[in-house]
Length: 298
Image (cartoon, rainbow, N blue to C red; front, top):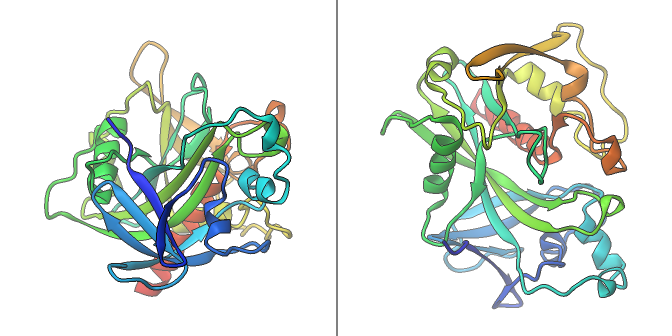
């Protein structure tokens, strides 16, 4: 199926984004850490963004990229991509679901080590938005396909959290980027508890190798290590030394997994050879947005 389209409203005109252009940069982002805010129009199979209000804009969302974003670097060093093969590809749209249980924990999944893109990375369930899909429709489809979870109608609510500009490889030092995505994070608030949801999870081994639930204090510690943080915050003594997860057992079934907090707090290394199991930078940004939402609801 055809992918959804990303369009920017620049100087009053709708324009597509080429693969090597930074979305944040086109929207006026500077060299600082962000996030910035963008006005959005969400239609079936299409997302329109602008730094200024425009007719039809229904949301104003934070948008962020890592400090080491390769497309930001390419904006400053255009001679780099003159040596690369030209591509007609644009920027792909994705939707990721931050699933919150009724007891205020959120679900993350680990990508299998056999995947070519972001292996062993902990992320929310999510994937590409198709040309005929609504945002929530896409997120719920990915949740069902990856985790086997189908939420009962009228037993959940949703909130748009924000946007993340993603690349793979994530740093120019890893090589020229082969994938460029804009990820829309959607908070889906279930009426079921973590225990009830976990009992119904049936993960797809082609896309998920393990899953875990994070409570707010652990999520806050993880989010504080977002890549580019200059001064890591001190960890609370109340935090656990490890977090309980569930992984696929060789030969079928599940087995418990204890993940050290140090694993969850790793950042994106300078080289691909140093990469290990970790939580993605975009996921840490999404966790920050989730915690801000919880704070507003108190």
